[in-house]
Image 1 (cartoon, rainbow, N blue to C red):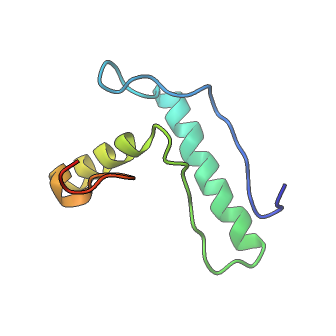
Image 2: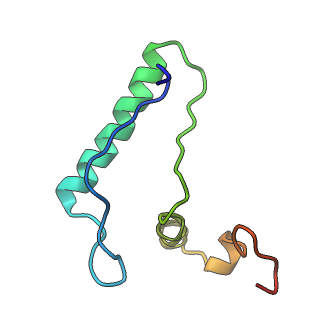
Length: 89
């Protein structure tokens, strides 16, 4: 384990956001607080740069959907064909 990497599991996944909210309000608040705490820890350790990451396994669509909603942008402006695909699919 790397001391600069924080592993945190809040739940065993999220719900299908097509059918229902992916997270309840409580789980969302826990996730946001975990992010804030990670930034605080990095800052206290003297870090000058924080890079939050995600695995891209099953959550890339959710991240893109959130970005589109928050930025009021069409998906075509924010996403590409995906890993291993070209423009024709």
